[in-house]
Image (tube, rainbow, N blue to C red; front, side, top):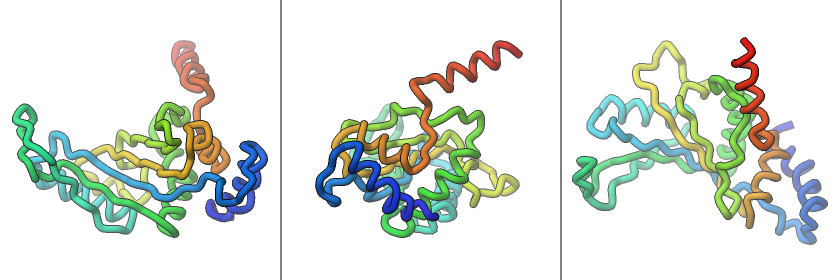
Length: 193
């Protein structure tokens, strides 16, 4: 069963009973997934810019939108209009395909993974997850990598609180840490070795 079918057939009824929604349209849903990368030190490196763009194209199958600086900041040697990052917004079928790949393939491939932090929710229930390395995605071949960079994935939802947002993602199979217990358990195992 695909992630979208799981949401329709299992998650919606569960959320309706858990939160007491009377109307099907009141149930929180995922509206979009945004991936972005800040260029940071690679602002002046053309190779880094090209690598980040190719990474996004492979991962999402979509062209990137370059984000530009709104004002000049002399401390960071940034001028107004300079490209400082890239982003891609996924909706509809591509969004569901990406989320399925994220839950079933990419998250388990994160190095030293001990569960997702529940601190990534904002007050509206949207969730942001940072990847320190873009190599967690199956489209990236490790033998082709010249520059490793991180990226950020934001899941936008129609939720009204972080609690609702977490309930949606937990029911879809996102592996969250339980009150930091998983991280503490991992540290104990390291100390005992």
